[in-house]
Length: 165
Length: 422
Image (cartoon, rainbow over all chains, first blue to last red; front, side):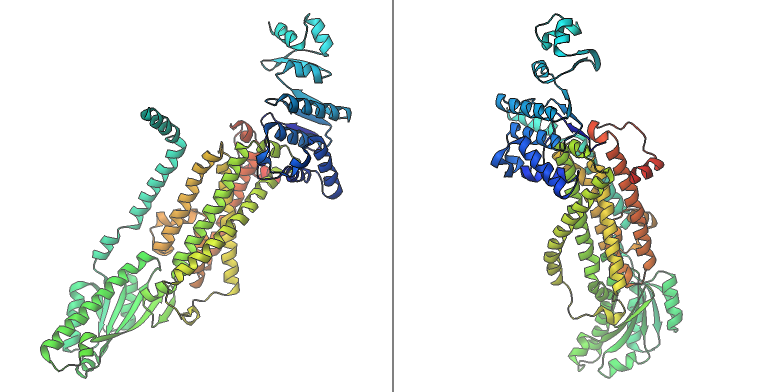
């Protein structure tokens, strides 16, 4: 099961004494050896897109770079389902946009992404189906257009506020 | 201003997690000290000895007078075998035999011979205190004879006046009869087993344990543990991987430490002594048993550290959790250094046996004296301890405790076994 589901926690970190590429290698070896592992790392490198900095120690990465590495880690195994918790939380505009691009790319490649976020605008931008959760209970679900129509809202953030009232 | 900062620092550092280990250590040390006893009191006590006087001369009478005055005599007769039996039965230190020609030898300007049959019970530092008091008795005998020689005949050989007696020593130690060696000399020969090995094992446990607990603290602090737990790998493999990795690091660090420390200790040891001459040499199978004992104790320590490490919230709290391991390793090392397993009170013996780190510390000394049951029993106990600890660790890794910090289910024995198989 853990081979087909990938999980990226909100506050996840990477081993600081490893280099970016070493970290991807370490994770890839849990999924297979040899060519399989090599291909997975190549995919991870491509997704993280850290260029020459991939050979630097994780300790020297900015928050955005670490997050891109971790998103690369989460998606490089081509999981059937990727659970991403607040994938762009605390990132600057450029890095946040890069992470969203990566997520969209994974979805196009066939991975189902379950994304959890407090950023309703990001949810609207990325998700095909949305479930609004309040106090642990789903209070509404549907596509962005359906939710906006249901609550007569201009965006999902507004729809959420109206839904919990 | 400063007061405000001091108050903040104090509140931050003076927390239960740092106080409890210190309190526990203090209580354990206090209890161990009480159980071992007081060196000063032991030294004040009269040594318990037996005497066989086969001579009936002036000097033997002087010797007898000094001995009866300053020691507790539990046997006084003429039969060596009977005397030895009596000393053994009454927990005496030695049987002193004054042979027939004692007086005549001194009159002939030759030192009088005193045969000493030592009954040695342990090779810990404190075990040699009672034999040290007997050494003091012999000195007193020499002094009295010297005084008499000076008073009686001023033409005596000065060398004889300074050393009027010589000793012929035999030490009985755990079924072995070792001729020509006193307990002090034997203790010195076994110094590497008594001091170097306990300290090296202690350092190995502390260093490897510290590595694994710190690793757990860092995993929590860097938020890498959650990711590791979602990987397609058995939780038992994560636990074992952490243990073996830390064991290797600990062994390398202990080896570096051992090189320096053994060279330091070598300067205190008497050179040119061959333990094989006294039937104390170890064979290949003995070294193998020592290795197995060390390896199982290391695994036991690391498994315990992993369990403790699961309570770490971050690197700093992990450092506090190393205290119990350090305390246990220190207690083991000190007890082994100062006392022999067979000479400590039964309650302390149980405590020592229960601490898995003690077994490799005692193993080499026990094997020298052919005490295989203690070593093999220790290995078996340590192996069981390790399996239980690994089971608990795997169970914790399988639960939500590492992620949520709470335990949701009771850990039962069946679950432990199930946890190990998973």
